[in-house]
Image 1: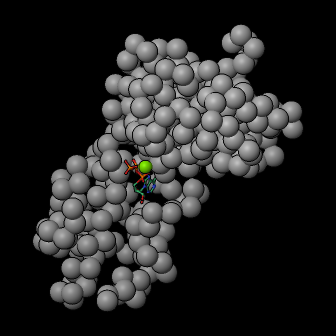
Image 2 (image 1 turned 135 degrees about the vertical axis):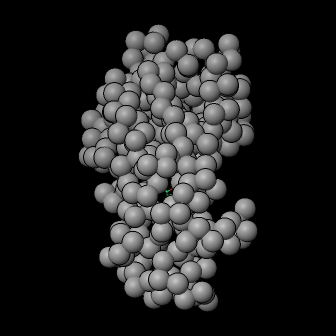
Length: 267
Ligand SMILES: Nc1ncnc2c1ncn2[C@@H]1O[C@H](COP(=O)(O)OP(=O)(O)OP(=O)(O)O)[C@@H](O)[C@H]1O
Ligand SMILES: [Mg+2]
């Protein structure tokens, strides 16, 4: 198997999924999302980030959440399922230490509220992050606000940040979701990366992997942009595949032809 690191003199695999937050590329949508995230968290409200598959939603959520100091915040990070509200309440409980649970929805809501109040009593702010939130069922959105609010709506127990594909917005616009949707203060959308940013994006990834010279020709960057539609995961897969194809052909730089070869090998 070809090791890209050896072939291109890199210190680690390029286009990794787990890029440390401090090494992330400053995507145009990242800063505005972090501002909305901070505002929602500071004011006990909710915010939403949407985007196509592989546009950078989960990474942006990770970047925003990692800035919350654990001494002040208790981040409850979930991946949504297509289960009921009961399932979501169970997920929250498991994330908060797996206390004895009940089959009664009323008791489970009471339990989750008690757990959230307990966090607040320790001078921490709980923050609920739900990734893949487009998977949540409509009937979960009906009742989500009942989990977040306490004491006749006088106080918010937990700010909620939802991340998901655009179908999430359709669910939030449905009339039964209104009680929860009315607590959303900001909507961010991860746009496709424009051609003018794609060259910097690719160069950034290979540079944090240790490259000291350009690895993609200008026509390769254009081909990656066109074939990925500006979606980051696909762009990364094409770039990695193009580097592989270039190594096989003993080329010192990846070209559009290498991107074309790569595009026949990814889904
Ligand atoms: N700010 C960034 N800097 C560098 N790379 C990034 C950044 N954001 C995303 N990426 C890269 O893009 C890939 C896809 O991002 P991510 O998994 O966050 O997308 P997503 O929108 O959550 O996808 P999905 O819809 O499948 O959940 C990541 O694995 C990472 O390599
Ligand atoms: Mg994701």
